[in-house]
Length: 121
Image 1 (tube, one colour):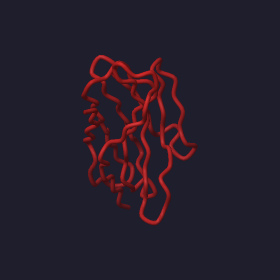
Image 2 (cartoon, helix red, strand yellow):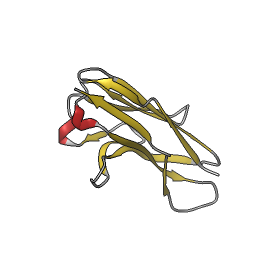
Image 3 (tube, one colour):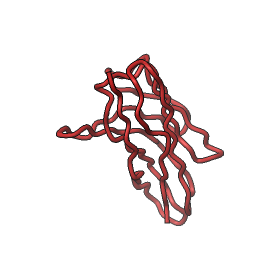
Image 4 (spheres, one colour):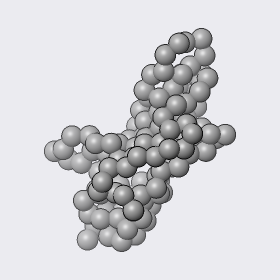
């Protein structure tokens, strides 16, 4: 019943910006860490950014200073603000959330459907 719905992807030119959103719904007790992953054609999926429930963040080195991850706990939503986009940022971006459901003792990772980000030169 837990669902993650992503939005905000698109096609932009190098140097422009996009903001991705991921809204979580369903039977949820709490959401722990949330993050964004990306996968380019022919490459493995990599962690782009991660944010804890309390707001601590981590980023892959290639996006530091350009991307910002944030979350709105009241809306069960995580965002990824992407500035100064480069062609090498082109990938499918996937939202991830570590969720503890009611009447369970362990959290479990859930994934969004993916949204395409294409950056042209």
